[in-house]
Image (cartoon, rainbow, N blue to C red; front, side, top):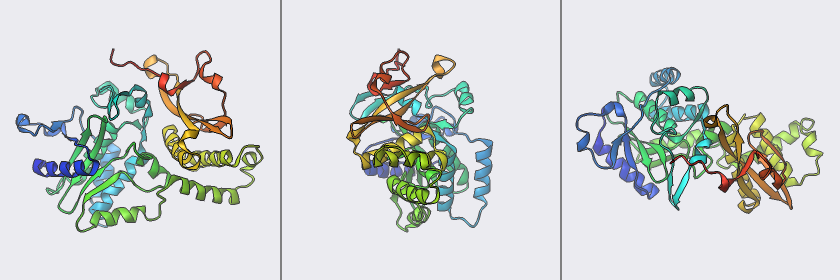
Length: 360
């Protein structure tokens, strides 16, 4: 597949208009040539190789020969598979430094500029950051359409937001694809729990081909997490009353009982990861109780070495003058005492008090 720079520049303009932010175009380093100095100033080559696992390559090769699926459906199949395969690594957020209201900084070694040791360590789990999943997606699509000269694919980099996402343009449409859009529950979580895809943005689609395929994929799915959970709870309480006896016999308020059911469903039915549980419950709480009812805290997960220690986010709630915590690691909601934040070797840390000074 050759890269048509002119088409990618048109795609970048559409993406800029849609997001009201100008990204940089990131190209596959395999295509780096002696003409790099002639590229537009907003086009650079990635610092890490775009490559696929053997399993993903076999999946793409099989998908490419399926003549019963449209190209649009194939794109959605790839997107869906990656969302189910990986989870967002929210430990990276413990390194984030806010420069101003719309500018952030992260260490490049956390997924952006990586070496062999990094990639080897990542093979031991399925947690990934936007840099990594965007490369998987971009390379998957490049492999899928390697014989289609009308199709051009790149990664977009919003430098100030330290964020990668994917762009694709062809004869019929132009789209961006973002598996971990941090403005919503990430599609890495949404797809696992039967929600709609929200991270694909259709920039241009005169024939409505991609819109039709996306609407068809989303047709039987709920857009709203809280509506999905309300429906699940209604079904659960009818069909599994004995199983839920412990929840029903507590003295908790209706709101707390609802949240406990939600956690149980996300854990037992969908086996959701800790970061996905945080995002899902945060959105439900903000809609049902209001964002003023909760605050974020870090939970420290000790590793064998200091560099292996991870930090993930949990939620402290104030409901009817009682404090609770949603411990997304343990996947439970329980009463909470503020002294847990100040005790010696505290596991939970106030959100603003964690400082990982990676610049020194």
